[in-house]
Image (cartoon, rainbow, N blue to C red; front, side, top):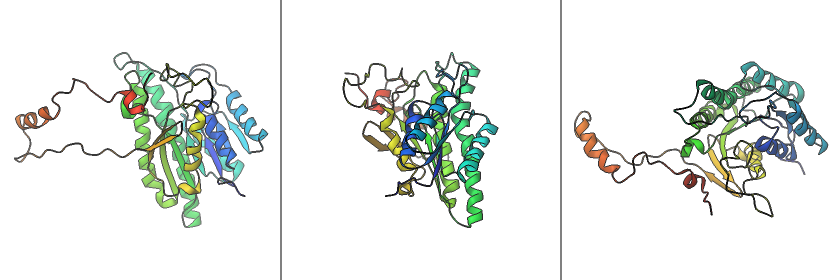
Length: 312
């Protein structure tokens, strides 16, 4: 019996730990040859000396289980290193079929205290890192499609976050980057569909070193698999990377511990029309102020409401 990803090759960025590691192992279990990318810095804020250790360890784990894998320790936020990552995959495995973007860092601070460097670094690693790898993977698939004179196989799975949906007071840089990734995903999905390529984004809830503060107070159970374990997320990534998901494109999915939710695109909540050529201040006041009456100033979605998490 053949495996669903047999004969396919994949890149997983940020795959040395946490979610990326679980995803790389799952893709390999499903038959893909995997390039494990991780810059290897020990700090979740992107600090510390880069190391080949995390990527090498995961690649070795895949090979020990009988799979095919190699490590790449480049920084995907660097345009040329991302290009080298795609080139390496094509050189080693003949082609690239699957790209899973997962690499990221945190530099949390309130918006009134955030430095320019804290903003730029998070946008660079998350959003630019997703763009860099996507850009070169897309060029590879487009060239192959032109050569084949028809569609080819290509899958992109990007990592967003509910921080952009619900807001996250101390993470303006992270929330903005994750929102940008959704925009990048939907644009890419439209641009590459004619070449046979799909692009989707996930908002995973998982307990990793990047989310240890978010899930403080939601302790793992004494027995059984943690509902927030990264292993709950990996199967969806495997599915989206597979032939079975050929009709899934430009989608955003939230998942954790045995639950997956398909997120609708924003819908109109209310609509008001001007009774003259254009609105006046007084008319807008008469229409909109009553609509928002009774709501506390600055009210937004509570993070626990969107996340579906409640502290007992």
